[in-house]
Structures are given as structure tokens and as C-alpha cells.
Image (cartoon, rainbow, N blue to C red):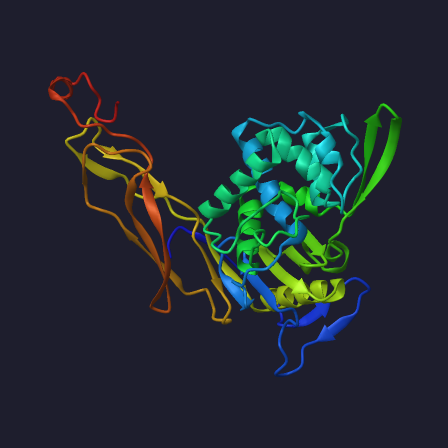
Length: 394
């Protein structure tokens, strides 16, 4: 395949084991299930491909894994520019009253958005989650409405939120392992900066209130950060109803995997099952990436103010293989029209790039126009005839 740089990574030798805090290792015996928890899924982040699943669509209680959606909405606001990391967030009496996992914010206490993010993702602070929800949406109720709207937009068909932190035991607050993987993928691929926070093991924050100044230590609830090589996140959860759950994100050799475990009987099983799925993925996956494709030819335009327009790849093509086949033989076919009729709009589909492995199609990506080209009018034609409008001018 001419003019392309195609990266492919073989993740190593398949070793299915369970590694959790304490360093113990449990090797899966022949015929034994990979995980003992009732619900789980392993997803490759860049493609969204499911590598392994066990009853992944059953509705279950999410506990603090709820906060993945809370974080997603926070980073959405940061991207829009309506929120900034240095903005000060004031803790309300309601936010302070949250029980469960908390960082003990006082009523009226101010913390920056960045500090609140750390409190949520590292220490799973319910009080910090509610404070951020109120800061962004005015009330937790309105924020939760936006959470459900965002979930629907992602196709999370087995999810409904009742609060922003997962403390509720309402029967109307539920999700599934699959949906947790979906929102985790959206968060870590769209906003990879979150992994800078979720990979922190311990960090101190400073409380500044009318009572004075005091240090408070945040400790990550995700023990895989320390015990599993490459683990960089993301979120744990546990209540008496939800039992133990985790969305674990790990990176090795250019591959990012999301391992979700729901309703585990205890914290050791939660982390062991997450590690077992990650080992399966890193041991069996290789990723083909068309990271530096060749420049595409310009396309002639008929009846436009330009003679031709350029085009490019809409997105980078990535293909995940779990069979072990060699990816050296991936071939690409570029399908573009000989010419197009004006008008042409930037971002519109121009054609398709199709990818084949050993003669079998493995995927495709759209090719799009890079520029606008309006239809030429009478005066444009006159100017072109008289040489006053260069063929490639607007």
C-alpha cells in the first residue's frame, strides 16, 4: 500500500490471570469462566469493539460509577468554554449534607473546578459531585436531566440516572456493564485529560473555611492503579445494593482497554475480574492504524468558481484484530468520483477509503471535501474568460 504508515501493535503472549491489590495471581483453568462476577465487558477504546462480555446488557445498580457521566458533563462544559479549571465552586448546604464517600466540604467553602474534579475522580466525593452539578446546572435535578439526555445521545439504552453521584438506592437509578463501557469510552477518548487525574494514587487538597485551613488527603479508590501495569483509571463504585463495580482503563503499546465489572460480591473479585479481562485483551489484541495515509488527489469541479477541490480522510482508520493474523497484508482502495458538480460544501462526503485483509473487507472510512466551492455565476464566467479571476481563486 503506497504512501501510508500503518501502525500495528501485537500486545504479547496471552495470559489470562487475575491480579488485584495484594499481588495475588489466579490463573484461569481450562473450562473455567473468565470472570466470576455476574456482569462484565471488555472494550477496546478507539474502535469501541467488544472483546469479551458476560451478561453485559442487564440493568444493575451503578453506585459511584454514576460519576463517570458527571465527569463527562463537566468536561463537556470545559470544552464549550462555559467552565474553566480555575473557576471557583461554592459548596451549598445540600452538597455538604451528602453522606457516603466524601471529601468533607463545608457549606460556603470554595474550591476550583480542577480540585473538584480531583475530589470526584480520585476520592469519589459525593459532596464534590453535587457541588459541581449545582454550579453547572443550578440544581442537581437539572444536572441529572442533562445526564439522562447525554446518555440517550450515546445510545445507552439500559441507563437512567436519579442523582449525580450514585448514592441513591432508587429503583429508577440503573445502568448496565455495556452502558458503563460506552460512557467510559466517550469520556476517555474525547477528554483524555481525565486520565491525568484518574491515574493519581494520592494527593492532598486544602480546605479553607471560617474554621481555618486544613489539609485533606485524597486516596484513589481504584487499587488497580497500583497493582495493574498500565492502569490509568477510571472509577469504582460500591453500595450494599450495587455491591462492587469498577470501570478500569489500562493502556499498553498504543492500545487502550476498558474493563467493566458490575455486581461483584467483594472488592477483591471486582479487581480480579477487571484484571482478568484486561489480560485477555492485551494478550490477544493487535491494532492496525492508518496513521499517515497518502495525500488524496484533488477532484475536478464542474460549473464552480474553482477548477478543483481538495479532500481528506474524515477520521483515522483503526482495525482491531483478536485472531493473531498478520496485518502486514492490509490493502486500501480509494473510491473517489472523476468529477463533481458545483456547489461543493466543506465536510461533505467526497468518497470512501476501503480496507481489505487477505481479500476480505475489514472496514472503511469516509473521505470529505476540505473546502467550499460555490456555483459559478455569469459574472464569474466573464471574469474567468477575461483572466480576472484565477481558476483557483474564491
